[in-house]
Length: 476
Image (cartoon, rainbow, N blue to C red; front, side, top):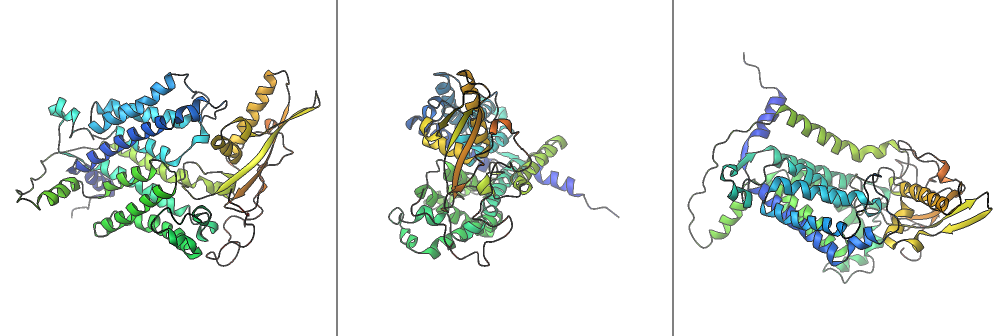
């Protein structure tokens, strides 16, 4: 009696199956071109100066990541454009994709106040593509080194890209299952009065539109994303996603995110979909010969490679769930916000000052972040506890250099979440320079949101009803 193959060998056999390289080549080309476009956007709007050179403060993810002096920081950013084009052309691919991902990661790590989910997403896909044979067809590498040329690849690169995008899309829906989002906030705050910006803007006059849109986005991600894997529903769901991304691009200033996500979503189609699309177009004008079959090939995914992929995706699934360790509202406290795909989900406003107190000299100074840094940077400084904490220590060091050692620094910050009234966010009595930062539990100097129910509870029995009270007279 023969024994059926175990799951692991069957999985390896599936991932080693030869498929067309065409869909991976499309991802390589669009990925490189969109990042080259992102390079141009930053140059056009002088963002390297505004984000990194001009500010007197920066808040890197790691202390060893420091801002290069001019002109080197501009030259390095130019590498994004250069290597983006080389990746798209399939030129010196391995070096180009490593350089592109590394440079992009460097700028990502330079300042937490500039954190964007789509920049994190670019790095994840860039890392994955480093190990993929995306350069074996079209164009430069395949021409320079004919022995490298191949019309087929193993299935695992395409499967890995699909799984990475599925994780992002599904989490983007799950994290929106909150009381405010289900009531239509902050979409109501963002879109009210913007009826003339898109052809369906007349719907913004009705509260029910924001509620249906909010629920629809959840369904699109949680249900629609898995349906991209099924050939019968793939095209219809992709078309809905295309409209969704186009709408986001029209209504929100979110850079390359809609376009790179849409481009990556093409990986769900059949591996040889570009050839089918081309033949469908040309077939209208002439009779085409029968499509050639894929050449035979044998691939082997090493056990170490399979283990690395397993660990990679285990981390991708686990990291967005770390907020579960904090018994608070992530939208308020920020604990677990980064790297968890909470995209366009909160509307927050903060204001406050840092008080520097010298007990020796009996003097007090106040620093308003909006007066010493850009609006974009100050908004994030006052809205993120870890940056509030770091800025307090920066102020302490700055005062020590001016001859005022042993000062205490207090953060008196008030915050608004999704249009609710401002309330105290930090404990103004705490000297942040004498407190240890808590990594695995809430920091006690961050005060709870008094206008929201405890974690896991709804403020009332009907989450589809609009919020009552607490609304500000104007949008901040």
